[in-house]
Length: 275
Image 1 (cartoon, rainbow, N blue to C red):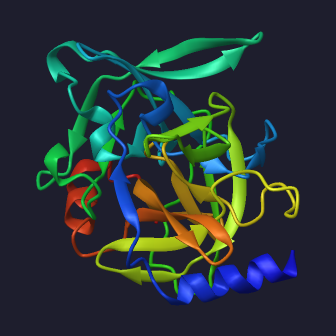
Image 2 (cartoon, rainbow, N blue to C red):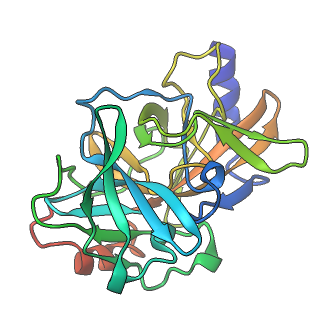
């Protein structure tokens, strides 16, 4: 385990050059629709209850994303998670597992996406949106961080997607194990260009404790990155790369305190939202 961590640290020091990045459009097939926590452990019911599954219905089919309530009615998630949705007939729900079944809890009233975001951008530092539900919908709320994290800060990510990312024989990105709320930790590798970046393992590994050196990959998008218990970032995308210790996964989260995002959040979020 120590060897893996040392080699991973070396890879992180090299940055993200050479990584094949992907965006995480929510209207693709379920196994490639958003970003997932790999090597994550199953979250306990009482852990980060503000983090919820979002289910959206469009002409392209059903998609899922992860979002975080930051006040009693508003969720922060990725901008691409609302692609193809219509505020005049918004088919977007906050869902929860009730008696073993995934059940809609509340229907969204409206969404706002960063005006500079376009799905054609793919992975982007403005890939963020705010979804508004009826007042009092939130099961819990998370505070937004007031500053960007620093390199080596311990981070926590959460998502409802796959626990394993891989490339098939044709080189296509795939995954497995979606539908479970997973949580795990890692460390910030860099904060630059409006992104919070880090590297981790692309799948559960016997050599590592469950929940250690996690990463995001092709799976539930819009998932949160917490530092010190506060929401610091939202998933935009990631990628896979071959290294001296095998396949690693890169993760890029929108920095919610970047100058690119701050004006949008100030306009879109309710004044009562705390930082």
